[in-house]
Amino acid sequence: MAEELALVRGSVLESTGFEMKDDKVPSEAEVISRVKKGDKEAYHFIVTRYMQRAYYVALSFVHNPQDALDISQEAFIKAFRKIKKFDSQKPFFPWFYQLMKNLCFDHLRRTQRREEVPLDGVRILKTEKEDRELKEVLWKGIENLPQEQKEVIILRYFQQYSYQEIADILEKPLGTIMSSLYYAKVRLKKILGKYLCLG
Amino acid sequence: MDHQKLKELISSYFDGELDKEKKKLAEKHLKECSECREEFEGMSEFEEVMGKMEFKKPAREVWEIYWASVYNRLERRIGWILLSLGAMILLFFGGYKAIEGIIQDPTTPLILKVGIIALLGGLVVLLVSIIRERIFVRERERYKEVEK
Image (cartoon, rainbow over all chains, first blue to last red; front, side, top):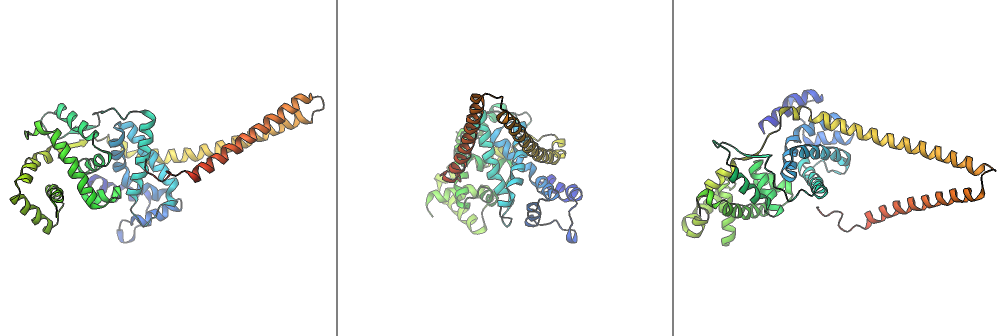
């Protein structure tokens, strides 16, 4: 996140040639209204702000880094073409997330890769040695969760979003997110039982 | 609050997502309910393992050229659209001129002229049918707004 912010505040603002009032970062609604007029530099700002989040979301669906990169870029192209339909008073990312999710599902349908549980893009940090077995069990467990629980778990643990942010992105009530997370955790905790010495 | 909701509340408590009031409620229930204490035993260990999971980061260069890739693809797409449009106009014009020449040529056998006209008629009917179907299906598609 810090890296993302630094990019937005630093090089992006300079390179996109944004006019800043009182040295302030322009609001998203302001930028989007410029994008709607076809301003590609304004879109540069949006893409740079969300590219990392977009990539990781795509990766969580398609698992393959190259495909994730390709789909996330495709999603930005599609979003640019459809931006006139977007209500600029709403936050961009939840709208973009739904658009990209559909692209990911289209991709999975085309490539029939859904059954795979690739582990190349996932890792466990801070352990002396990566525990491949634990990683495999955990990732398989996440993969087998119902779609909504899976999304919630990934947004929470892989991207560190707060409950409210997840609710905004998935356009669901906060209570629903709370429930989904609870049920997902119960399932995963059961799966991880022997690794956590919980029985 | 029913027991199930209290469990969800306690789960959120471990995520540090509760306000003061709900936090107190969760702590109070944890003290009183052995079932919940048992269920949430080892939660911090679970959170620790989950907290260690992350996606591998791509090389920094990926981000440096990300916008350029998006921009190029955007630009290329516009290029393809213009190219296709131009090619279609040229093809239609060339085809029209070629067919016009054949039809107007008095030495062309009648059967060939009829064949060409039938072919063209068929193409037009097919084209109109496809366009109509696309528009009709899109308007009538009941599930087009449903998330895939």
